[in-house]
Length: 247
Image 1 (tube, rainbow, N blue to C red):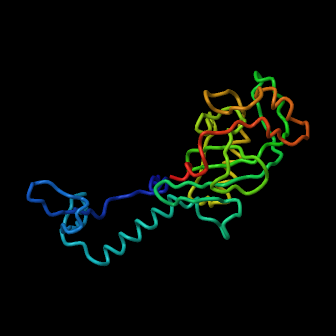
Image 2 (tube, rainbow, N blue to C red):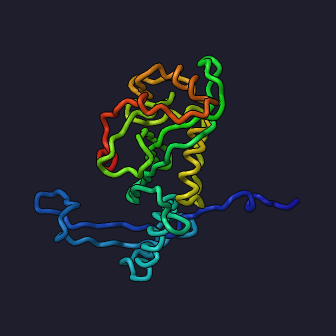
Image 3 (cartoon, rainbow, N blue to C red):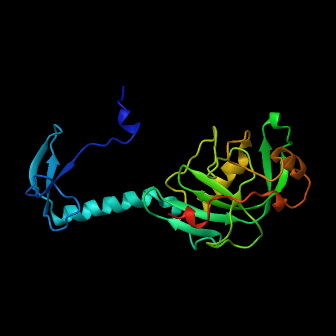
């Protein structure tokens, strides 16, 4: 028999440990913001038994390797915010810090919509209003817009006239499995979120979300398969502003 366990998955073993020292203040405390306080980094190799050995000051080659690893990790984390080529024209804002997010808009368009049976709304194609989208790797907010023009920082936001929307525009995705892998780029990231949103079944209202000037059930009963543009008069102004979406 042949042992093939090594082929099941990659195995990771510790090979380096870093210990960071900072000078103590006279009061006995430590300051992480005092740039005048010296910092010393000690590097350890990891022995065969998993114990730290060969303590020594962090070398320049080790520093360069560490910087490369940190840069690579950051790129993988926010790779979905990097475009394949020229940034798409409907992108409004990109935040590459921390977990990162993208802000983009879509013009009025016809989409296939799906509703659970107890809403008594037929599934089918319907025109939807222009929309503003804000998405990170695991969270989506949507808002409605009036007109067809590309929004600006002063453009007024409206409640997205759909079910499954919270008061702050956040979308309850239910059982939809969100998969944004390392190879995903900005264009695919936006397309995936739009597909997740319109490809799931609208099922229920949430307090303060999905507000409309008319009955939302009747609104979509009239819109689906009518071929008519979305009734912008049904949109309700939102308390949030475009500027508030960019902390």
